[in-house]
Image (cartoon, rainbow, N blue to C red; front, top):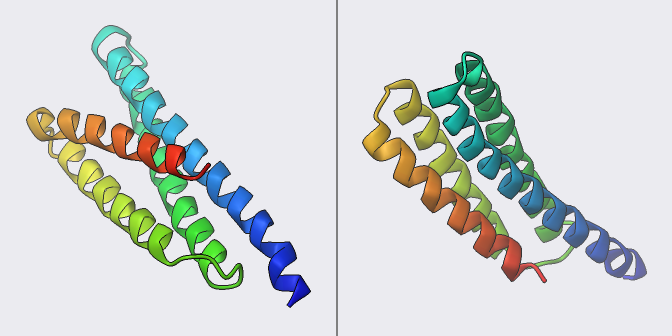
Length: 122
């Protein structure tokens, strides 16, 4: 029982760090989208950033599962993280399909949701 209590804060810290990383990578994608419009290397920056953001979303799912199962936390963050990963998947698909009318607002929504998740982990 002492092990569960000792690992719960550690998993919660990992979860918070994963959400913070995800939020940062989504914001970086907005910056690289601006570069996409103004700089020759913008497409490369946005493409690499998309992969990093997707990896950060997968890390968020992993952190949520670790905070839930071994950490004894709520399963709710797993649902949020999984939903965000679905949104990230849709974002990648509509980005590849060059659908900016969907891609841009979805990116704004994702940033807002990520900020809300980060604020809720205090």
